[in-house]
Length: 283
Image (cartoon, rainbow, N blue to C red; front, side):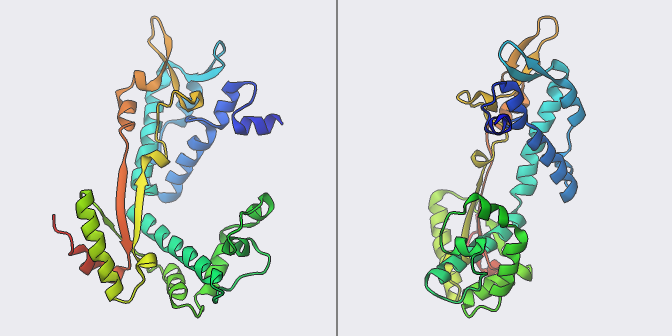
């Protein structure tokens, strides 16, 4: 029960629960360094040791805070998260590849619902997904990348042309191209309408081959001063002669800047249509 309550953030010692789930928890600090290493992107590197050394417990308010010498390290950590999202997690190639996968799964469900040719293992978690059922904990834990990839391999030979094509694109790394929609709403509406016509003219179904992608920081908080949820606040010790515990954005201009947000809007489509679609917009 204690472990479960710590994960839920309801443990009797809030300070300990914050180490498991907060804006400065062990999971976030770990995956940032791990993803930086695995992707080769140096944006995610920060001084973990100094943060760990600087974390203390405010016994009066039962919360963790970072001692004054560690403020710069926390700023570095939050900026590292920002740049990893902007340059890695929101990277156009990654998002374009994800759009192919989304279209592929969307088509598989549609074809299955219509009684079409969608190979699947009876009783598997993938079958449950195709049936539109919610997975219980057991089925969820059974599902992994290997299961999904194995099914997609079979779908390459589906009699459904769209499902087969998307599965082949996924495996042959013929991923979609992404085009930034750096335009106002009126221009975007006109552009997307024209792009849809291009896609249809080349024999593609826009529902699966013209995918709008919006990456907003609101979905992945770099740091948000949410006063309604104290666990999402990072507190630091400010001042040396008369130190006091303050919320970090109150004392750090760098952190305040991260709350301005980041947004990327793109449209993804088959690579062979790139020249024709990109020519539709000339700012």
